[in-house]
Length: 252
Ligand code: 13P
Image (cartoon, rainbow, N blue to C red; front, top):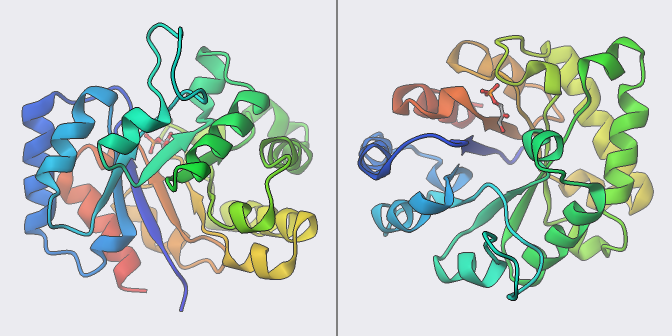
């Protein structure tokens, strides 16, 4: 049976009251696949979300982390700090961080290692810009990101990384990749990592699609053989929409 992960990336949204109300609402949906659902919250909300999720199988985590354990890095948050909050997942290398905050494949690689060492599941984002796609370079671009981001990771660790294919042109634009475009790239990603490691590792990877996924288009994307779920921005802010996407995965 295909495995799924439905992950909500709240980005820089919500205050604590709204976040806790969301969690109460999500729990009340009694999703049959709670263990395949997680919420990635802003740092300030993580502790409250974790508390509101006590006794639930729904995962939770952060949207970024620093790769050093501690030290003189003003304004940063380390893996042990997040581990202490009980997080299960953490986004790494989101295109917004790559674009606005100077995230590089080198820092992404270090963050992956730090999270894996702590037993936290990284959700690694890759994806091309519109310019790259229009020039026909999307596979070369994404393969380059993967090779650099996974550099030096042994197969046993690589298999634990969740990958999210998020074409930048589909993020927050209402412009979703077609199910065929999304499937083509997710299959390509699986192929690249099967080549770097082995088929068993490639086959076992969870590969998500992200970019304007919503209740109306989730099922046709999630049905594709190489798409194991979604990393959802805008539609993860409303509990009914997010739960509807989780239910679409549960129905497959
Ligand atoms: P949207 O679902 O708002 O397009 O955002 C996707 C995303 O960036 C999730 O990380």
